[in-house]
Image (cartoon, rainbow, N blue to C red; front, side, top):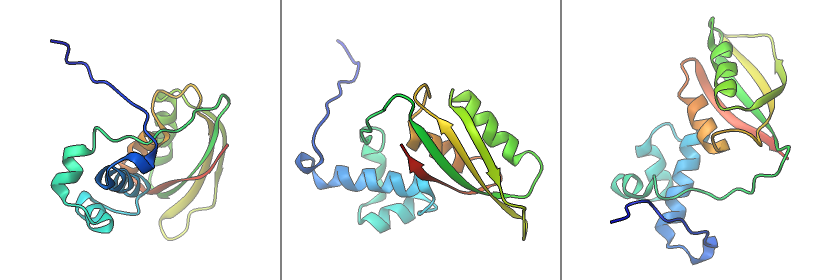
Amino acid sequence: MNSSPKYYIVEASALPEIFLKVAEAKRLLATGEASNVNEAAKMTDISRSAFYKYRDAVQPFRKMNTNRIITFQFLLRDEPGVLSAILSAFVVQKANILTVNSITPSNGCAIVTIAAETSAASASVDDMLRMFHQTSGVIKSEVLAAG
């Protein structure tokens, strides 16, 4: 018996509402708008069990253009190694860093923007955001621009 998954691209309006809500909950978690699954589930009016049931099966489709440049913004704790961990994560994902801009830290935090060319990245932008958000010292991570 072949147990490999099958995938389909389906227009969003044809999907059951629960799939759209799970996708939205995942986005809220990835961007830091929701701090945990319970909060994301409440914000999207779904149960936690529904989120866990479908979270791995629902992925947004994003057309990946060649030379896709994504500008990420981070709010980081002003601690040794935090920026280095973020930069290393870009390397691991095979994203080419184009620019790094930082504002002088104040109140123990720094705002950093990083533009990266992501067409060869081994992870989706959503997965990268999730990974960044889980990095120690990262308070917030989000996409500022995509092109």
